[in-house]
Image 1 (cartoon, protein in one colour):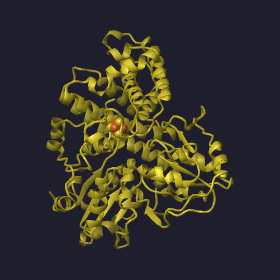
Image 2 (tube, helix red, strand yellow):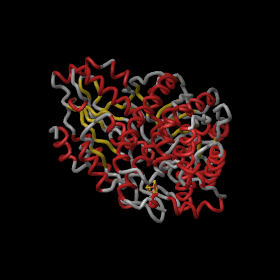
Image 3 (spheres, rainbow, N blue to C red):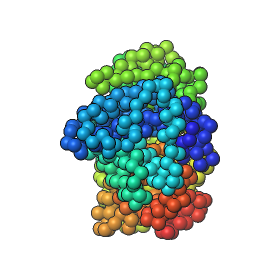
Image 4 (cartoon, protein in one colour):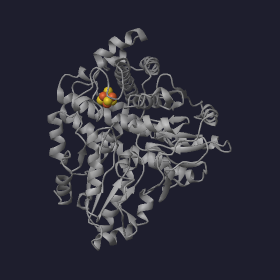
Length: 542
Ligand code: SF4
């Protein structure tokens, strides 16, 4: 096993014997091989497109789902991953038969095997198969960005939103990861292109979400519990939450959100369900205690699974690309419909959730909501009531050093406003940081993909202030990252020419010294230091 795709990687350099996330070597091997055969399928599909032949939509969806299944904490089920490899090989072989120029394709396009061959092949095609440290670093930066891209695309596809240009880019770029003739310069260009498509996929998902559920509005979400049995929904897939809410109507079963699902409650359509009671608990990594005390079934709709404790494993359900061996997986039918009756029946036999806290979280500061406040915000900046905006989007994680983000939020001057999205917010969204002119000092736009909303807000403010460049705004970035969705957000910001992003709690292990230097030189990316040093640096304008 070698994996260094997330922030929690062993000793900040790479997981070896077993993943810090709980990933075992056999699962890691299937993920490595799945990525490699998906690169092979992508190379064949891209070749066919060059030959002006059509690629069926199911191939696009297969590539997207394969990538998502290898995202950190998404799928721990070796059998599911192995069957994805088999399906990918089958589809690849049938496309290969249609190509005219087979000799121009890489080995992954022609390789085939049975399940008995998978472990041995996986050992030869993992991350370390690329010997040159800098080429490996560029390749993995691109692949992890593409995994994040695919995860966002998967959620958009679930709402019927398609963008074949994104699919074509993903497959072209994956195929190019097998091309040893590409130089560092070629790969840097692909990094930027990944960022360009990152912007595009976040826009697609934003339009899919707001088209289906309305524009997020300022909302107060309860953190306490009711008295009825309930189902807890974690992950990111809003369509899954909608189907579950439909099916729980009139059953006496309530629904709560957990972790990254909290922002669903900011959408007007979800507020119409009176059995959507509130948000239970905190960010994904606190699930062992929180899923246990919740008492009812838990539905995981995306990445964010921690190997479950026996105390709640039999009430943990997965769907979409999430998976864990021994937990029931809810499949969609051919029309995308899912039957959640097993969870509902189980919930009826469970006790109501145990209360952890009793309060409110305020959020819903998506782009349209903030646009409606633009005059007020511009006035507050001009009058000196707001001195700076700090974008603190990203994802939370287990590292003890992440208390930095709580301390940073507390230590910021009272005339600053935090713009946030993603689970990073749980480090400070329950603090009483006060208001400026009726505006809370923490404005939560939503899930990590809603960093796109923050970018739109920045562009709107740039226009309102008459600036030429968003780097002229009184706005700085102190991002927390954990997984691959955060990587595509980072690349999207770099593509938009955002400079001087601080990234923490540690720099990605997959950035070699030379590749990190490229990002430092061209974009001024920096890590984090102490709270005071960073506040001085960010608010002092350096
Ligand atoms: Fe380690 Fe993260 Fe990879 Fe898991 S996903 S094996 S924690 S680097």
